[in-house]
Amino acid sequence: MPLSPDEIQRLARLARLAVSPEEGEAVRAQLNRVLGLIDEMRAVDTAGVEPMSHAVASAPGAGQRLRADEVTEPDRHAEYQALAPAVERGLYLVPKVIE
Amino acid sequence: MSWEIVVGIETHAQLATRSKIFSGAATAFGAAPNTQASAVDIALPGVLPVLNGAAVECAIRFGLAVGGTINRRSVFARKNYFYPDLPKGYQISQYERPVVAGGSITLAGGDLQKVVRLTRAHLEEDAGKSLHEDFHGMTGIDLNRAGTPLLEIVSEPELRSAAEAAAYARAMHALVRWIGICDGNMQEGSFRCDANVSVRRAGDPLLGTRCEIKNLNSFRFLEQAIAYEARRQIEILEGGGRIEQETRLFDPERNETRSMRSKEEAHDYRYFPDPDLLPLVLSEAQIERIRGTLPELPEAMRARFVRDYGLSEQDARTLTADRALAEYFEAVANAAKDRKAAANWVMGEVLARLNVADATADQSKVKPPDVAALINLVADGSINLGTAKKLFDERWNAPRALDISVHDEVVVRDLGQLSDASVVARLVDEVLAANPKSVAEFRAGKDKALNALVGQVMKASRGKANPAQVNDLLRRKLQG
Image (tube, rainbow over all chains, first blue to last red; front, side, top):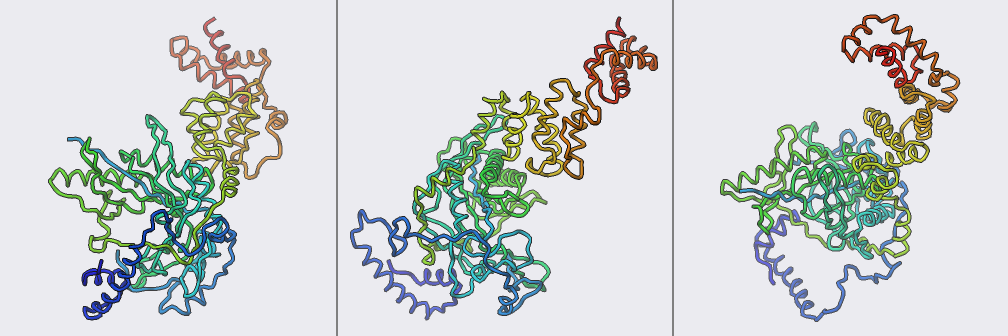
C-alpha cells in the first residue's frame, strides 16, 4: 500500500523533520520501495508461526539479563552539563515549551 | 433521560527500587536537579539500557496479588514522542505483550461491594520534569525522575461513578503499599491516576467517546474531576453536541477540567519493539519464589479477622486499611485477653494518634505488647480504664521509649486500682459531706449532678478508684 504525499508530510511532522515537497517526493519513492518489500514478505504463508519481536530464541535463559537493584552511578552532572548549550541552577534550559 | 457514567483508570505506581529501571542511578526523592541522572537517563549516544531485576519482581508481585496472568515472555517497546523531558525521543514501555495481563481488585466499603477487572499492568520508565517558571522565557529540565521505574495498571472501563472510581483508586493505593511495591506517596508523585471518562444513555450497549483526565494526584481531585467531566459531557450531549476525544487537565482551584492538547497534535506513538532490550523471559521457579514471599492479602486478612477475632465487617475493614496497622492489631490481639478491647484500642487510641502524627503503625512509639499489657491490666481489674489511657498517653508522648514495662510501672507508681471497699466508701462519704449542693441537685432529679460527684471521688482517689464501683456506691448512698 503506497504512501501518499500527505502521509509523508504527517510522518515528517511526527519525526520533527522539515521535508520540502520536492524532498518529500524522493522520500516517498524510497519508503514505498521499503513497503513494497514488506508486501512481498506478507505474501508468505505464516500460519502457525509465532510472531517474533527479536531475532533471538526465547527459551528460558535466552531473554533479557537482569541487573541487581544497586545504585552504581555517581553524580556526574557537572561533566554532562558542560556539554549543554544552557544550564542554570542545575537545570538544562531549553526553548520554552508550552503545553 | 438518565445517563450512565463509564470510567476506566490508569494508575502509574512508582516502584520501590533503589535504582532506576534501566540504569544504576539513584531514585531517591528530593535530590538536587540532575544529580541522579546518569548517561543512560540523559540519553547520551551509545548507552544501552539494562533492566533492573527488582522492578521485574515488583511487577510479578503485583500480578500475583491481583490474580492476573504473569506472561512468561513480555516485550519492551518504544513509545515515540518529542518532549524536552524525554531526551531519547521515546519512552521505553510495554505494548503488545505486557508483563501482567488481567486480574481484578475488590472494592468494599459502605454499601459498595464490587470486583473490578484489570486489563493489564506493564513496566515502563518515567520521564523527567519540566519547570516552566522563572528561566527568562526558557524551560528548565530536571532529569532526576527520568528512568524511574513505573508500573502502569490499567482497569477495564467498569467504574460507574466518580465515587466508585475514587474507591478503586484507594483500593489500588492500599494494595500496592500492602505488597510493598510502591510507597504510595501522592505528594511526591509516587502514585498518580489518569481517568478515562465517558457517558452514555442508560441501557446503551455502546461506549460513548471518552476524554482522558491526566495526572490526578489525590483521591479527592480524582472524584471531583470525574464528576465535573461527566456533567460537562452530559451537558454537551443534551445540547445536541458531540464529544471530542481529547486529553484534559483538572484545575483544582476552579474545580473544572480543560482541554490540554488540541486534536491536530493528537499523538501517534508509533510503538515498536525496542531492539536494545531482549524479551523478558520469566521462569516458573522465579514466579513461584516470589509467590512464596507475598504477604497475606488484605481481603484474606479481613475475612480472617472477622472469623478468628469476631470483629465486625466494618472493624475488620478499618484494621486492614494498611498492612502495618493490620499487623499491629494482630500482635495486640494475640497478646491481649480481650480481643474486642484490642480492636477498640487500636482503632481508638492508636489510630487517632497515628492519624494526627501522619505516621504508620510500625512507627508507633507504643508497641503492641504494651497495649496488650494495658488491656490485660484493665481486664483483670488491676487498673481502671482512665489510668490505662493515661499510661498510654504518657508512653506515646515520652521523648524516648520507656525501659520499664507497663506492669512494673503500675507497681512502682502505685497506680493499681483501689480495691479496698472501705477506702472507697470513706472517700465517697467525704465527697458527699463536702458537696451538699450537688447532693441536693441529684435528689431534686438532676441526674447529671452524679457525674460531678463521681469526678470528685475519682480525683480524691488520684484516679485509682473503679468508676463503676464509685457510681454504684454513690447511687446507693444517695437513694438509700
